[in-house]
Image 1 (cartoon, rainbow, N blue to C red):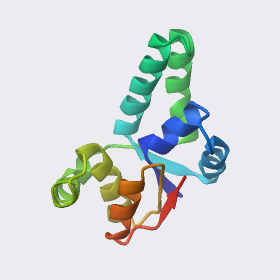
Image 2: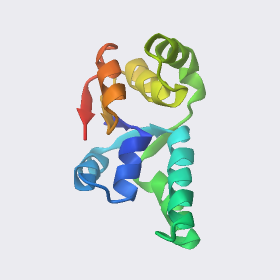
Image 3: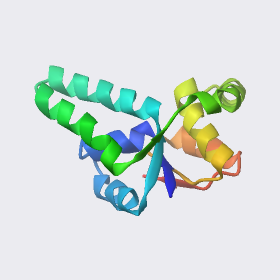
Length: 129
């Protein structure tokens, strides 16, 4: 089981470089924050506005996400995330995924280099794609 953040999830959904590696991890089992669904939906809105995906396809993808990844609430991780975000000048969004990984002692899957580097300071094992 790994924590998958929004950057890795979007890489998979958008079939960006190395998306196949993300798929391998998803098959092994991943958990993410409910925040990732919102961020993925936002990425799909941007793609729909560029006519790269239809609104109907975007809806189907969002409805498919709970079938490929376990979704957990972010509220339990805000305290730790606030500490991480302020100490390392990260967004609360990125810090929440680090907090989830640290709080649950679960490795993190990300495409964000700064987030990966910071995660290691909290004893989190990171796979950077």
